[in-house]
Length: 115
Image 1: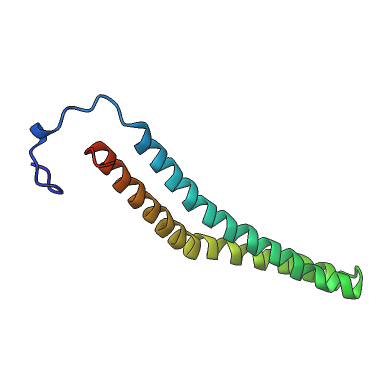
Image 2: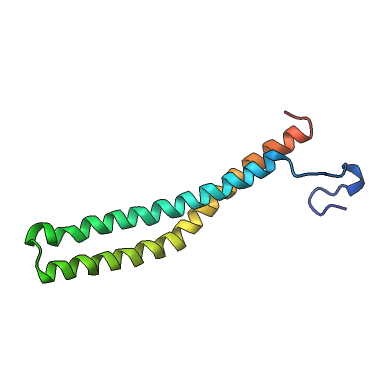
């Protein structure tokens, strides 16, 4: 007895292979999750490089502007990595899960003959 739909497993034929639509849905979900994480990480690094170039642009290349450049790069690298791994994971997981839910409902409707 299936705990989700309450039907007996005898009511469904045995599956020989996973349908291509299901594999594509999982692949697209993982792609969307990764897209959000990478976008946040690269966005943070882009902002970091822009901010780190400010001392060099206004003061020229001196020992303190070079130190500020690398210090700011390290700071923004760590910041963007942590934000991408926390907030990016959450947002990406939610987006991927909602995408998967819609595709799964469409798959079930087609499988059950409703569309």
